[in-house]
Length: 249
Ligand SMILES: [Ca+2]
Ligand SMILES: [Ca+2]
Image (spheres, rainbow, N blue to C red):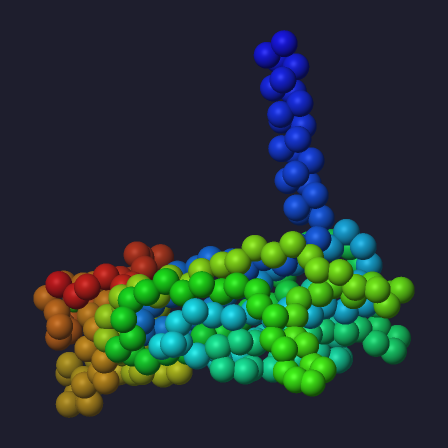
């Protein structure tokens, strides 16, 4: 009897899970830092062919701005007719294959990435990203729908997400080592040259002292040990530079 009840219970759970997974848009929950931007993946699953996707979501923090949405690398990147409309704390995203473009075949994967911006001195916080319906009188509605080729549409399941903004430290971004403050952030040989110039040839100091303190020792300044550490990392398979999220020693 107990086995039979367990079987029914598990079957109900499996049916529930599979029906939830059939048509769903889900917002990932990710961590970002006060000294970086926020980048949140949005995924969707559809079990029927779609002729369009519309998603309207809202974020909860007055200190955070929705910066943009990118379809790059996503399942609807190919659609020519797509875009986003930002309305304060809300964004509506749409993609509609048209002309000779194929419909969105059943499947699962990335819709795109939502980008958030905020000031360096933002307080640490967790913001909610949830679906919303926006009515603009007299007759415009932004909502969340999957469109079918028959021109009918339906509301998929939705899974909200969170952006957890944690404390970063100062000017440093990602891992340390970008001593010359170049836009690509990843350390390379130009940063070694910059550090050598500074220490031994009267060159300018790093804009961000933490970027040059790659070994997180004897900071906040830098010394030759930081250069050796970065050379080891780039050319000898050495350890990664310390992340910017570890407070300087
Ligand atoms: Ca650099
Ligand atoms: Ca150091």
